[in-house]
Image (cartoon, rainbow, N blue to C red; front, side, top):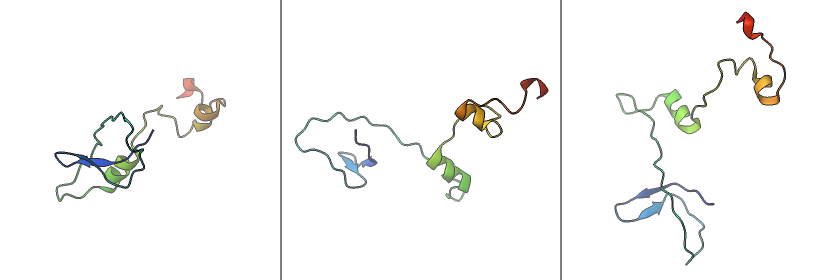
Length: 84
């Protein structure tokens, strides 16, 4: 599978960078719009909005930071749920 960024000019889908695709071979194309980050009133992006647009967010348990060994490696939890 090959993925690349492109834009539509009204008639053609144009890759934004050089793409190595086989010639004269049928291809299946799937189009997904890339979400854009919100802008501030002056049109610039907030630092955290730019980071979020690049990295995205992952939903997870509230105690991910303290219990990462438990969630990643199956280690016993450091805190007891009854004491929280």
